[in-house]
Amino acid sequence: MKNKISALVPAAVAAVMACENPEQPASFAGPTVSAQFVQFEASGTQVVTGEIGQGSIYALYRPQDWNGRLVLFAHGAVPPTIPVRLPPAVAPLRDSLVARGYGFAYSSRSETGFAVKDGVQRTRQLLGLFTSEFGPPERTYVMGNSLGGAITLMLAETNPGVFDGALPMCTIAGGTLMAADYVWGTRVLFDRFFPGVIPGDALHVPEGLDFSRDLAPAVRSALLADPARAMEMAAVDQIEIQYATFPELVTSLTGPATPLAFQVNFTADLLDRTHGRSFFDNTATLYTGSQDDAALNASVGRFVSTPDATNYLAHYYQPDGNLTLPVLTLHTTRDPLVRFAHEAVYAGIVADAGRSEMLVQRTFNRFGHCTFTLDEQLAALEDLVAWAEQGVKPSP
Image (cartoon, rainbow, N blue to C red; front, side, top):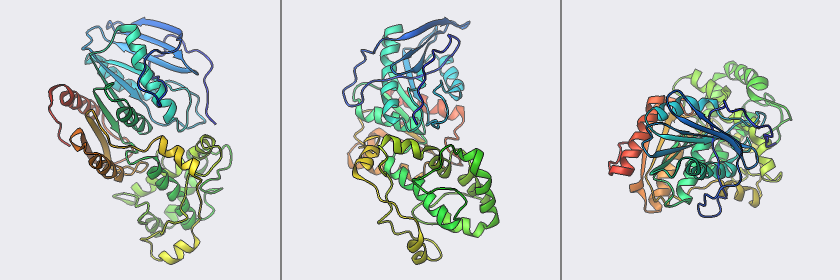
C-alpha cells in the first residue's frame, strides 16, 4: 500500500524533503545522492534537486541574499493511491520564505500514506543535504502541517540541540492513538446512526474505494435526509465534532480532510504498517451524549486492538512534552480532521514534563483543517525566530 517512486524527476521540478534513522541521535552523513541538478533562478536563488534513499525526491533553496537561516518543511499525509511526488501546495510558502532570505528544504518522502517514520528520516536528512551543498546554516527551523506537524513535533522532541525552533501546524499533538480514537470512532458511530451508507466497517474497507469519488455523495445525502440524527451523532462526547452551522457539520463528514475520508483512504495503509493487526479499540468505550446511550452502547460496532499495533501508533508518535527548544503550534477551533482538543492535551503533556515555558499555542477561531492564510504562517515563523534568537516570546 506504500507507493514507491522509481523514476528520476527532471531538473525543473522544484520542492522536497529527506532524513535519517529516528532511533539514533541526529547524524547528517547522508547516503549517496542520485540525479542531482543545480539551478540558478533569475533572482539568484540556487536550487538543488535530486533523489535520495528509497526514491525520496528533495529540493534545496538558497537565496542570493541568504540570511543564514534554514527552514525544513514536512508536508501532510498523502493518500496511498497517489504516487510519490513533490508537494505542489508548498510553493507559495516556499517562495515567500526564500524571498525573505530564508533557505528552504523539503522532500516528497519515500512513501505515501501514514509515513511518520519515513517523514522523520527524510526531513531530518535535509539538513545534511543542505549543508553539503551550501554550508551549515546559522539557525535551523522545522515546520509542517497535519501529519507533517507530527513529524515536526517528533523531530523537535527527539533531536535536542539540532533545531532552533519548531512550528507544528494543525497536527495530532495529543498523539496518534488519540487521533485514531477520533477517526475510527467517528466511523463506528456513523455506521450505527447511518447503517449501510459506507461499505465495510471501521477496519475493513473494500479495495479501490476513494472517499471523495465513491462515497461522499451518499454520505451527504444521508446527512441531509436526517439532520437531527446527524447532529445527535456529532454530539456524542467521544467524538464531539465541532461546527457552527449544519453545512459545516456536513462538510466535516464529507470533505477530503475529514475523519470518514481519512478512515476510508488510510485504513488499509495503517493495517499494512501494523502487519494486519488492529490498532483501534473501543471494547471498553462507554459512549455518552446521545438521546439513548444504553441503546447506542448495545448496538455500536466493537473492535479490539493488539498491543503491537497500538505500540506502533504510540511510537509514531506519542509526544512526551520534553521540549528543549521553542515550539509554536497553530490550530483552528473547528478542525474536522484533527480535533482542537489535541492542543489542550499537549499543553498538559508539556506541563507534566515541566517545560511549559517552551510552548506557545496559537488559536484561530474558524472552521477547516489547516485553513491558515499564508500571512498567518509567515507571521508565526517570524515570531518563532524572534523567540528563539531574541528571547521575545510570542503571544498565543
